Length: 322
Image (cartoon, rainbow, N blue to C red; front, side, top):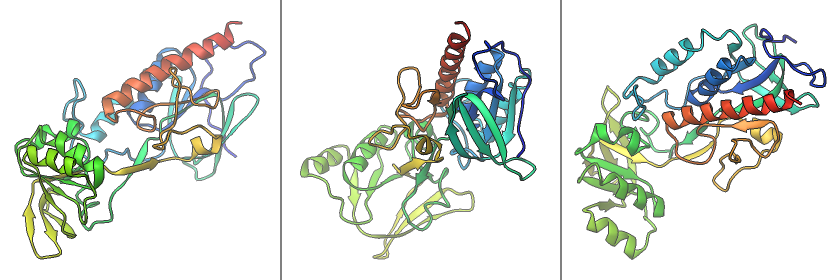
């Protein structure tokens, strides 16, 4: 099997077993690249494994990212990678990590390589930054319009659709909270439940007080235009509701299985638990970005990755300076 190696910059005591890298980062989004930048500046031997397109790839722009508001997702990643070039100890390789195991030296990973042969990689520490996948409702048009006509975060996209005709899709308490939040950006908000809503009379009263109407009729599909914007919602009874955008709070699942393979603790909502140092329940394994609890925004992921890089370097240094 092929082995990916980087130049060795750090000095390690003879009691620390040699590894290919000080840190392997699985995930090349804002969290992973943020950590790589810090660790590269610390002269750490780092491998970033890029498993593919980021979660926000369908989006027309990354918003609320200070100094980069509205930048296209791929352009943000291009700039981030470019800014890693001055740090020769950081290596970025395409390929998915398929297996990980804890060893005496740290961790051994099996990853896809450019040659098509699996690569074996050893590392002292591991940072998971693989993010999550959104589980969109099985409604015709939902996936096709995702990221433009169908949106998930008002803090990311609310400004762009302010004062427009908006819809919020879902049922129960979750959709009530999202609809009330969306009403800060527009006074024309309709909740579409695609069936019985399942909320209390008090929740209905709160929606009504904000001028939010509820449509509980079954939906056939979402219809958009060629640009990928939402045009209207088509109901089974033949009604059409013209809307400019629809917000949905989609369920999520972890994008990768490495945390599960290692037995890392997860929260009741499926996020990977971390302590205040961003270390998971498995010693030596850290996590950052959307896969951890908390708000999910590109800027927050980048900041969390930066924090993880600092914590990792300080832990490595403590182990070296005995």
